[in-house]
Length: 279
Image (tube, rainbow, N blue to C red; front, side, top):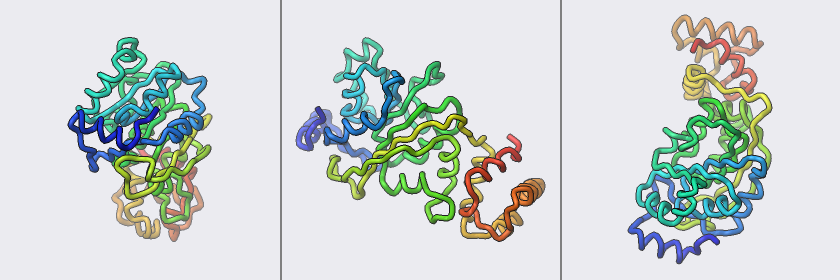
């Protein structure tokens, strides 16, 4: 069972740890949300799970109790020491493989070269959600599915549609590889300490033919979106040859008017641009 807010405070006091806002450390204290995470994840076939930011191990324990092998990544050394003590039997049996690392630099933890399909189930630290997700989308293999706890605003940006103010480069990268399946709202009161915003659980599944944007095309699309309110004709003029010529040809062959803005271009058209960019 998850620790209550008072029990969470007691454990944090015992290990001499104060939640770090810069790391997005808000500890889940609602057992119903843990159960909902597992229900939404539907990982009955996938026996290997990557968990980012296990914290005090609330979700970790439920995953282990259901016989999943958990590859957890935790950056905080005090929390790592606590988890090593709490879950030592599972660590000895290699059911929990705990890595002390920055998850943005090591997005799948000890599961470096996955041989089998794996899923991600995580209460994702808010401070790294976008950077971690882009790291996951940067190379194959990508997870079979992801069930993530996110800030609601972050989730809205990730799954934003073309033509909306939240549509951005990460939206494009995500739409290329995953499809949105379901979501569940989560009150801020389900955490200790209580964050300033509400959260949301989101479940997504890998597309049958996922498209991963290569590094140079990701860099270019992010750069273009820094000028999202400018017309593409003006954006292209600021680029140097031969990139300007590549963008002109892509726009022409895609029948895109120079007056269109980056936020008006759909993900499929950005995928076509990726094929034009040298890697």
